[in-house]
Image 1: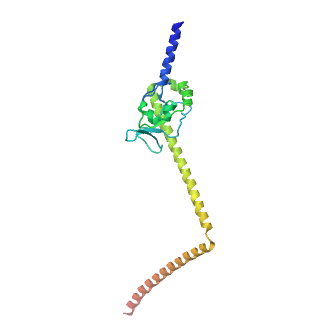
Image 2: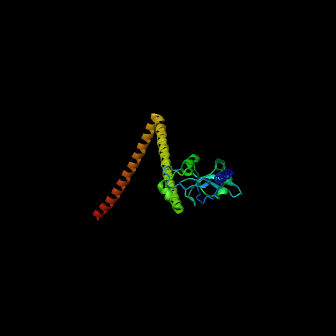
Image 3: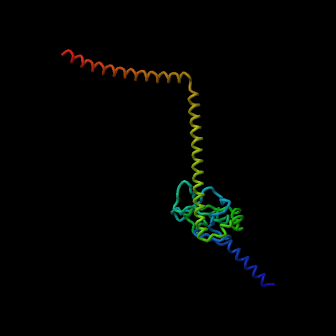
Length: 224
């Protein structure tokens, strides 16, 4: 009876060690190991904690800080998806080196989504038949597709904000014009009309002078 108990304890220790271990971000790991998650093929897109990826960067003074990566700007390395403990996610600048992920844009996969889909092997029949190379390729395709969707959504939101601002500015200008005294508006209109009349008279004078000069020369020719 002791031997099966020892065997069961050994299995539990292996699983626990797997959950506690971490792998470099370049490796797509088995379910239950902290590290990179292959997101291709799942019926439900991966839930993440932030709408934009986080990147740990060296600030040039021997310190690692965190930056938010804008989806509108391409980076040398496309974002990857990692499953990490909460304390590491909240202090990523401190723990990014454990995954070799300094300088790599990262989305942190929601723990509940991970457990419901990856850890529980909630895979489609196609996923179950994939080779490691197919998992890697489908992960790349899924990440590219999600980044394009995020970029289009961000561009749409920016356009909507611009339209709202443009409408607000037009309303402000209309209210400012309506708040001016009527006499000031009338004086302005009269001033514009006088300027137009002066320009019109100058044009007429220039035309008349040219006509007279031309016909004066013609008349002189006829006198000879």
